[in-house]
Length: 126
Image 1 (tube, rainbow, N blue to C red):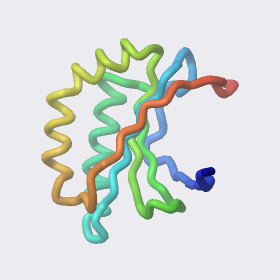
Image 2 (image 1 turned 90 degrees about the vertical axis):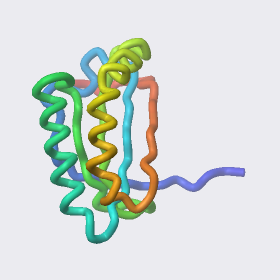
Image 3 (image 1 turned 90 degrees about the horizontal axis):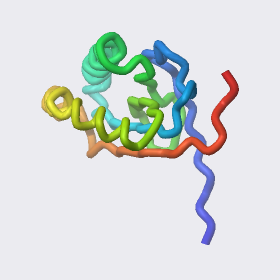
């Protein structure tokens, strides 16, 4: 049975400070679904977090917002890694900041977030 193709159109909020694909072999996305009344508050919290990540830890970190998609309004935080080992190491370093972020965003989420990890097969030309 085939799956339907889904289309998602994104608008960058905090673009990466460094090229996404330069040396990257894996990407991680966390998709957060705001409540109708919590969208502005959630955006502010996520913008602050994204800028903090870029400035201190991860120059490839980015934040985008869905402007069209089957899942409805969503914010997408993403990062790129040179290996699975790097992804795991960064995840361990982020435990405290991720916990703090979850506490700040919980009241503004309509449903649980989705996490995706992908392997880059053919990188984009820079």
